[in-house]
Image 1 (spheres, helix red, strand yellow):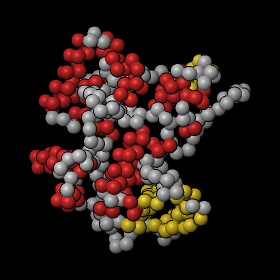
Image 2 (image 1 turned 90 degrees about the horizontal axis):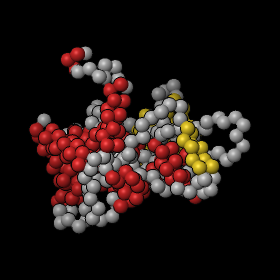
Image 3 (image 1 turned 180 degrees about the horizontal axis):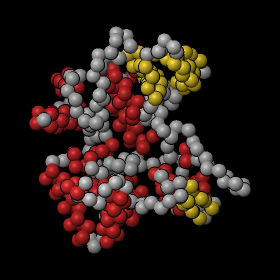
Image 4 (image 1 turned 90 degrees about the vertical axis):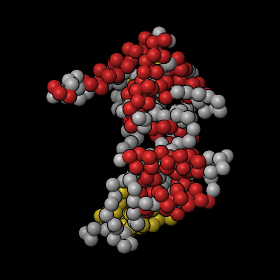
Length: 349
């Protein structure tokens, strides 16, 4: 266990140095050593798959979707010897992140959004979608996955034959084709197809969040947003700046948590945009995930994580930010009440 922990730190530093062209450490020896290390049988982190059995010779796998999940599947399967290929209907990697709206920012920091075996360089921040796509492109380049990606390939159907073989129909650059595979992996996401809520009697314009690009689309209009997911929160905040009125409708109440646990929450968009500039400094304790996401604790030693939490509490109290204190209480109450016996100690269950 100690060796694995040390190796994680070593590998994280190697990857960071390899990504940063301004460092002298990026050289042939580093690349050779890193590739050798990554190609070993050592397992680290959540982005490492559980594939362990050696595949039959020549076994072919087709992966539908070139987003974050599809890319990890491609990397892991190829490292285990599978003949794997990603079929992506757009012109590049990223999936929904590649075509999302202008002001889309990640809802968790780059420290947690990055793959465990490919550290995201720089200080933790909320990155815009375009930067996340660039990160995925670096991931592809670093692990040399380019020849396993087939872009502009729209899968139209798949049939499992009696022989156990998959027959996949697709269209690429206007040409139809049929491909065969021993295994098929679907990485299109659970929200691949837009769903519209029926609104009887409504005669105005109806738009799905997948068609949203900027608030210019609702300038001067009265807007109702149905649903209270991440996209609706972004669109509602964006629309409020320019629409005549905005109403957010949801079936049940939900506490809306700010991304920042300090004064930056007064104008989140401006704060997130400022984080992209050189010299901007945001501490880990300032981000919502410090108080809500357990994986943060797994990235630090117990003492370091405790220090982050104590730092957050002290600075929140110093700023007399009672709203944040109340929000944290609501978050923990909801988290506890969402599971059976959530309010009991472990020795009481």
